[in-house]
Length: 120
Picture (cartoon, rainbow, N blue to C red):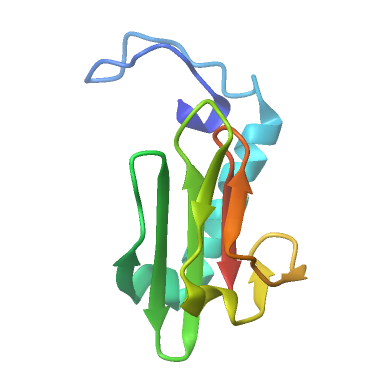
């Protein structure tokens, strides 16, 4: 039910709770974008993991061949800042979902529960 933001805990075997699969089509669309990107990205599926996570953020790169994916996710219900390693600020990144090119400063501010998926 996470694909539509279902807030009730589901108990195995997942047959006792009814889920309204049409309750939040924008969330479903976001999941579809994420899954489509994962399916096409060899770096994300097969790459070597390097973690930069801390208690507030899940941050990692996955590298496969010459391709790198950089994921930043705020795990908190408050704004957090993340110190980006120098090696990741010295390159041009592309937003995996919009295609917009960006470079990162030494600090990235992430809104509550937000995420960024970048590729080089």
